[in-house]
Image (tube, rainbow, N blue to C red; front, top):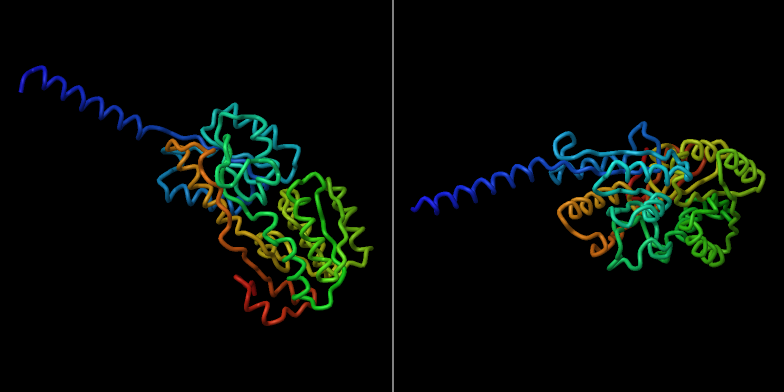
Length: 327
């Protein structure tokens, strides 16, 4: 081997070693905007971190999670997004419609991965599920048109046969909730049930709505998806228990915290799938070319302790269909 050949091989080997070290030393910054409070750490975020570890991302080694929590305050999302952009994160995980919307408005450069949304197409976040385009992709919690909203009414009727008047708490500025209301009204006509909506815009407004629900004579309660209610689930569950109102919620953290039952996509699984998107994007995939995943099933969770406390005997056929029963 000539000196020139040896020098060339040595140079190539050194370059490979340098590149390998550089790749190993790369530290990714993932920004996370949760609609919930920081303490205790929300279960969906725990699942997201766990999934990232399984994919080889270790905090303090090759990963920095920059977390921000809106605590159910919808007005905080734009400022939280601005903080993450200023910190030059590589990707943003947004766990609610307001967070994704704020991130999309603020940046077209940083990839955005969504988790826990109802219908990103109907709400204008992406152009299609198969090819979202732009800088947003991720997984959904369900899609309007899937019948999920009508199912809430059906399940309440099955849990409490004869129920006819149901109150629905809504945040009027939440595009996802409004998209689901059409389904709910259609189901109410079929089931010959009456639904009455009560708008909530603030904590004071929620207390006012609670009073109005109590005075309405409603026999049941539906709480659709919204970060506002998710962050205040303890108060909502307490109200329903005190009024002995059978209530159905949009995801399992409510029955986990004492609510009667929930029906919808699994939010924790949505966050686990979001970790896969983050991984692919950090490895070079373009978010606009990654199809948006939908839940493979909706889960029904029933809390028997809560049912007993309000004097509701859940029919056995409904219990047998439940994906999880809390006793």
